[in-house]
Length: 162
Image (cartoon, rainbow, N blue to C red; front, side, top):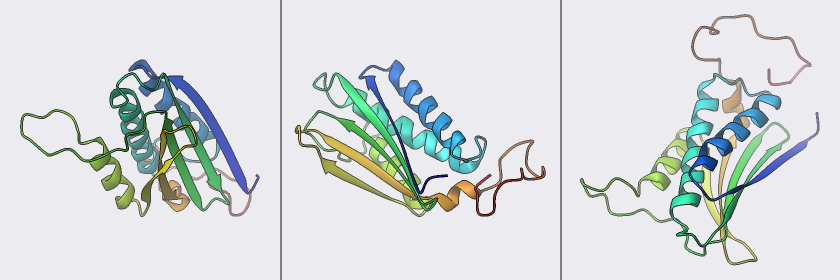
């Protein structure tokens, strides 16, 4: 396998695209060797869901699409970025009991930190931004959750994530 792998998809900024983004990333990571039923895969799906939801809900119609970029470097670093064209950066909203939104970035930061990763935001040349998460790929080497736990691992080349 290559030292660097990339995949990208651009989706319309509409609620149905959140599940499409989640499915897309899960399929790519599965192709790259992340066990689909692992804790790491579940965490990444939740993070992507929150990132995509933010891109849809908080751009106020000013970003007709959003792009999901997935990068894997030397089986060490997994980076996922969601780009939209709205200039406002994510921010944590005051936590009010009656408030039912504004917690997405907090969830993203907590899950990412729990996996030993980090969150960053970069401006785009067009005036929007990309919210990146970076995780160590070692989280992908966790055992699957559920009935597959304890099953013999698949054979693969030395050093490959299977």
